[in-house]
Image 1: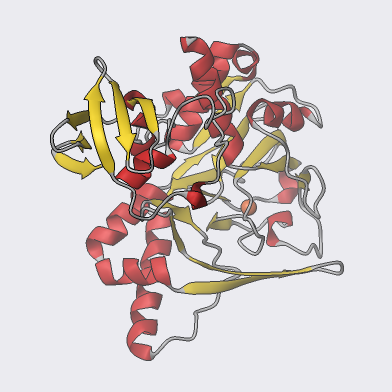
Image 2: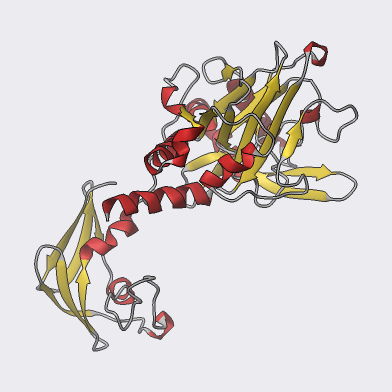
Amino acid sequence: MQQVNFSVNEEPPSISASIEGNHYPLPALWLRERCQDAINLDQITKQRLFDPHQLDDDIALLHVEKKGQSKVSITFSDGYVGEYDLTEFYADFDPWDGAPVTKAWKSHSDKSSFYIPFQELTEQAGLIKGLEAFLIHGVIIVTDVPNEPDAILDVASKFGHVRETNFGKYFEVYTRPNSTDLAYRSVPLGAHTDNPYRDPMPGIQLLHCLDNQTSGGLSTLVDSLAVIEQLKREDPEGYQLLCEVPVRYRYKDKSVELIERRTIIQTDTSGRVEGVSYSPRLDYLPLLPENQLIPFHRARKRLGQLFCHPDFEWRFKLEPGQLQMFHNSRVLHGRTGFDSNEGIRHLQGAYIDLDEPKGRYKALKQSQTI
Ligand SMILES: [Fe+2]
């Protein structure tokens, strides 16, 4: 986390925070709403016990008094006097909200920290290690997973709750003639995000290999964070269009029709790139004037080229007993084609939501420091 320093001035009364040379004055209203005493703030849940809409718009600081290293007493114009521990505000200035900082990777990056044996995940220290690796890289490969159906649910339960879809708790990936999705044929699959037509999109996907007797059918993974960094450097205008213009994704079978519109590059509320919704078998160009449509097409095409470029695409054989777990929109997945006459290729897949691994990681880290 970045270093946050607070300055307290008693005359005239003011408090400000400094981070890396930037100064942020803390307004009286902001401070008043964050009062920390037990009458106004439940000390266990840290949930507020008063109605902040009752606060005056023009509330002001009347008096500020230092009470030690990080403590301060503040008197407000509405008569409230409160003791504050300024270190409680650290979290307000943490852009990563306590999660590890992501690190973009390329095909030749060292991936030794991506691998973790299933047994290690059953111990707290091993689970923290696995969660941390996943949050930093957006992917881990769990090894020595029992080679049996349903083992995927045991792995998923270490990281979150399985998100059931119309495919069930988990889905089977093996060749089926006339199936409703190309994933169930033996054709190669380029890098893609799963199910951009759902709301929300599946956050995390697990794919467990039960059997792979084919010489093809290699797994491919690519970190969109690394690819988008490159696209942004090469083509800022195209990057911006892919951040702003939504495209339409659709899935239909006998029981359901799912349609969602979302931008190809996904950013969070601070503008930080989180990943993509990218499925070139499903998306169509949005209706734009030609002077935007052509740059949009060009940027989308370049994105596709970079996703399968050897500098970015990691290609490997997922062996029976191995399970790849990846952030569905950050790390795109695919596979090379295979000849189903060579033997069986059988994977099982499941989805969990994004928030749970982050939440479990923070709770486990905090329990270590207590
Ligand atoms: Fe997929």
